[in-house]
Length: 361
Image (tube, rainbow, N blue to C red; front, side):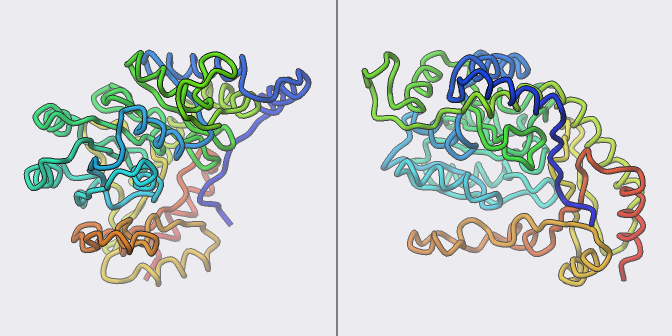
């Protein structure tokens, strides 16, 4: 079976973790601070605050921005549920705008329609889905026009760019996940990045029980600190990220060049986006997705369906009474299938994937 994802952990990561274990300093410490500095430098941003996950990074970022009960945050209905859960955690209300059918990212035209319909929306939480940046040329003017706070969910887009500028650096905050299937990993973990000194200070307080001075609690905070063990892995992975992304982009190009099928659409790439292919996502037309996934299984090719339900229609959200009809999302959720694109693929794997996909009937 060719897996849909394959974390690449080498001797460097094993050695780095061993050194932390030998030091006895397992919790958050100097290794975490070094990783934060290196990740901030990589993005060209002032501050990085690491956390236990991408989800906690989003929650802390929203709380640090003052988002809470009575506030409305506009976001996408087509993403992993954490992007909306983080809004709900704060007591704020999610509001949704539909996606584009080509990139699967939130549609700027639908953003403006939602803002015109509801002047109480305070913030916009965008998701750079599957490794491709949202169209920031269209989004930033809307943020400025409607005086919004901007949160970038970059959980799937480490190293992705819009016109040469890294995602996560456009808004008030950017949030990353380092889950094992991401373009780089710390095992579990997340990060908040920002240019704002005061916002960074608040985030650091929130992840550390509200403490700036030990046992003196300025805020009611959380234990969302990253460990030195996770950061040791992250430092090694960060040094490999550009190479990993280069391979993902090459693999994506090979798949796009090779796949030719009347029932299958390969990923659309915006001219100004540096797409890092967290996922390589096909659209299977003519109601053939189930047939296609059965066919992939029979041919030992892993796949993923991200995401079979829109966020508003999830069972856990039924009590909120969200609108569950989103025409583009409802179309896309029934067509998408992601196939392997990760850096662990061999030339033989890629050739097999192309041949199998093209022979689908």
